[in-house]
Length: 255
Image (tube, rainbow, N blue to C red; front, side):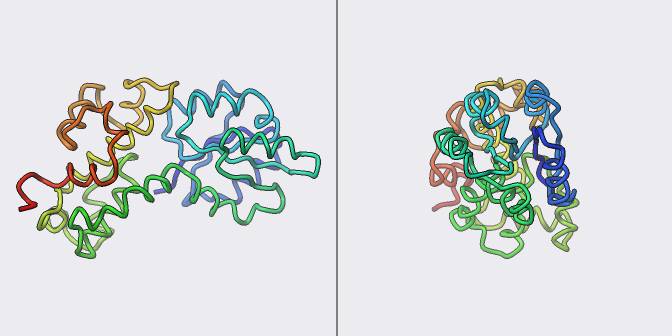
């Protein structure tokens, strides 16, 4: 599933270059017309990365993003010159994820976007848990990778089974074999982890996060956290990878 990228670029050539570099199967580019529109996009879409131009990088937009939407990485895309050292220093101070030089780095934009985004960070944290979750079978591993990538955006179990070349019932049975969690519990856990990440955005409240992740209400999100991981939603962000894996394994299967 392609990621969503929000872009606030003052130069039209930069926006066109970004769109050329990111075809729809790679990323959906959401064009912000203003800082206020960018804020609106971040409240209504699951955005994997924000791309800013030099003007936004020098102004209050970048500072606001790093304060109000800190978990969402930022990439600066501009025609950097030798006298832009101040912008580079500022980007480092404000923890910008990556810099790309317009007209030079265009071919590597897809790789930068995929490597720097929220999805890549989540994959780095969760994919290594496969062994701890007793996901040994190739089908289990492939399904876990798909869930880690797509669960926050919504996973169609039937479509996932078709992608893996098996029936839906077979997928559910094989994924939860041995000591592994059920497919639903794994899916819910990943969605809860994504919710905890989004709650690191001071601009978002629980109701907004619930809508972004497709929960019908904040109360359902709270209950899902308790059911999937056994802890309140507010404690999920503090769980280590080991603690997360331990809580995902059904009780009684370790003995």
